Each structure stands twice: as structure tokens, then as C-alpha cells.
Image (cartoon, rainbow, N blue to C red; front, side):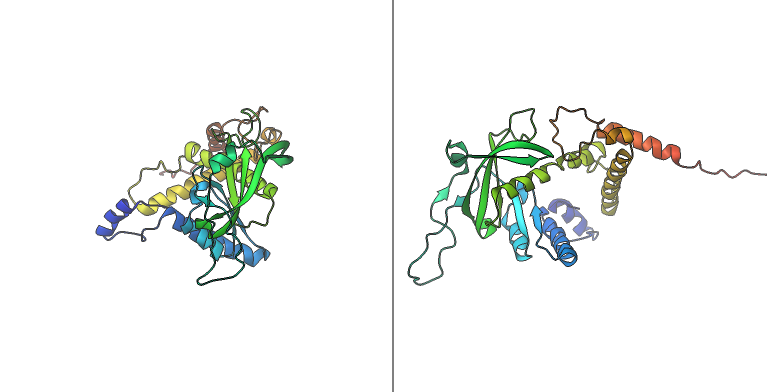
Length: 285
């Protein structure tokens, strides 16, 4: 669990600090490194890590590349990208250039009318037309060449990349040899679980607990996640909800939707407590 530096300093002064300060990027890198070792041991395959744009920074990317993983993430509109270095015919003193000299503008690339490609891809379980453009660039936080994909956002009310107010969104992958279609599908799969994060925070109250002890905060976080799992499990067992699955579908779908998580949480709690046996009371003779 992330604790701000100033809050952790108070615990350190009292001698009650449970751990040393770490940033969110460092904590995420430690968790993913543990998963990478686990998955590589089980499946013997290279791991692809799909993250939010907040983690497209050097402290996280450098550790992922060192662990042998491939990272897919969003890119900010003002990201500092550079072109590829020109091949050197005769090598001189010093090591060859790793990044190009000319800076690339995502805003200009996304606003240019030429270079777009339209293909039919299956996103969120629906076949749809996707318009995108792709190119290679060098990105210093990634330590070299990346493949950038710019996707035009779809019209409001239709499935697709409509979770942004921009006309387009940019993503990248640290392995430049893959196709743009693979990157688009990975980003869509990552966006499909955003609703689960929202439900855990808003419906189940993760982060809203008011307790005094650090370890009680950790317990409350785990309890909120467990509550979310219980609600989702109860939904799966509901025959009526099974006829209208929404997992992996965008929030703007016009199909009939199941009740919101707040209503589902209330119904699941009612079922759980109604199924539990009544507490026995001791009687005095």
C-alpha cells in the first residue's frame, strides 16, 4: 500500500514506520517483477506488461526491460519522442548515437491527414473498423526504439477508444518488431477492466476507510478487494445476469446492462447474511 512521504515521516519519528518510503513506480515495479518470475517459471514465455500511461516512465520501464518483459502503455500528447539515428558508415570515436537528433511531435502526427490505415479488428468482443497510423521512434525512458501507434477515437456512443476527450490516443510498445494490431488489441484489453477499478473504489469503498493503524488500512484494502470478488462471483451465479454479460464491453454499449455495482453489492450482502446460520444464544437455567 502506498503511503505518502510526509505521512511516513510522522511514523518514522514515532518509531512505528512499517516500511521505508517507495514511490508508486517502485512499488509497481517490485510487484510486476515478482509476477514476471512466476509467469516465466510456469509458462516459459516472454511476459507482456500492459499499463496505464502514468507508468510510462524510466524508473518503471528500465526495470521491466531488465527483467525481460515487454511493456505496452499509453503516451502523453507532449511526450518527447525522437527519430531514429542515422546509420554510420564509418564509426568514429565514442559510442554510436542511441537517439535521433530530430524531435517528433505526436500532436502534429495525430493531426496530419495522411498516413492513416483502416482495418477491421475485434475489440471488446465486437468486430469494428479501426483507423490508425504507426511509426518507429526513439524514447529515452524506454532506452531505445519503440513502436508508436496513434488510434482515432470512435464516435461517442459506439464501442472503442472513446474513453478520451481527444480526437486520437497514442500508445507504444517497447518491442518495435510487433504489429500495430497487436498493440491496439492489448490496449483495448487493458481498457476493458477499467470499470472494475472504478467499482472497487466507488462501490466497495477502497481508499475511503478511516482507521488509525497502517496495518488496519492494509486489511481494509484487502477486505474491499475480497468484497468485489464476492460480488462478481454472485453475479456469475445469477442466471439472469449471465444472459447479459458486460465483462470486457465498453460502458457506452447500448445493450441492456446489469444493475450497477452498488445494487449488486447490496443484493450480494443480503444473500450472504440471509444464508448464514443465526448466532446461538446461551440460555441460563
